Amino acid sequence: MMTVGQAASDLLAKGDQKQPVIDTQREMCKRYADSLIECAMGGKERYGASQPFYVCVQTKRERLLPNVIRSFFYSRISRPSPAYDLALYWFDPHEERLEFVWCIPDKETVENLVLDYPKGFYSSDHLQLYEFCKGFVEGTLI
Image (cartoon, rainbow, N blue to C red; front, side, top):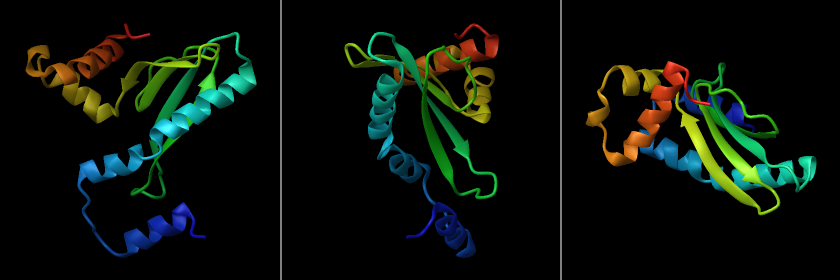
């Protein structure tokens, strides 16, 4: 079985192989929903069914492997402070209801969304992300 490190090293050795962003996004999303539900159910086992909790998805680029991006799923009782590359969900284990709360993309995207363009520039499907990023920059997103 090949490790992620071996696969990433092999791809880097082949030279610059451009991949469209949409292909990277599709690959990352293949197991996202399954991993999110698996984390929520694991949190239910850990914390019990009587107390709601949060499910966080932290996206990180591997420092030693620049072509590897990973999403780390974890649950916690307390609400985390907003941070770059973090998506937050709220889970009610009694009803097994998972709700999206907010998402903060990487620093460059936040800066582009909030600092470079006025609010009216965005279509309705980008407006929610703009509002999350604006609240994050202003320190009002909780």
